[in-house]
Length: 101
Image (cartoon, rainbow, N blue to C red):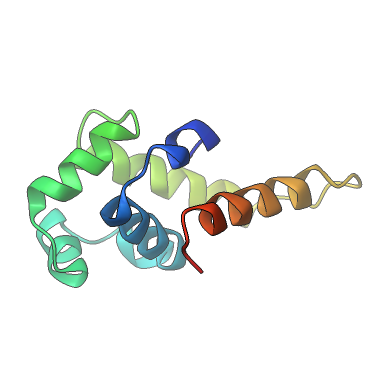
């Protein structure tokens, strides 16, 4: 859902939104844009810009993709190789480079 190229272009606010979304996928899929903005102490325009920056047509499109991603993760069977583990550490490396822990 979030590509390496997109993550590299994030500013500090984008990183905070990303972290909140990843850590609260089950909640964000059912939140309004105003509720999410309130939780993050940003404007609804900031949330909308984040959605557009990630290739979505708007917040509704973003929520639809988020719910789909969550559904895929719940039915996901672990692979026998280490590609998923490598993907995880790649994301961690990106965040570390952004000085986010």
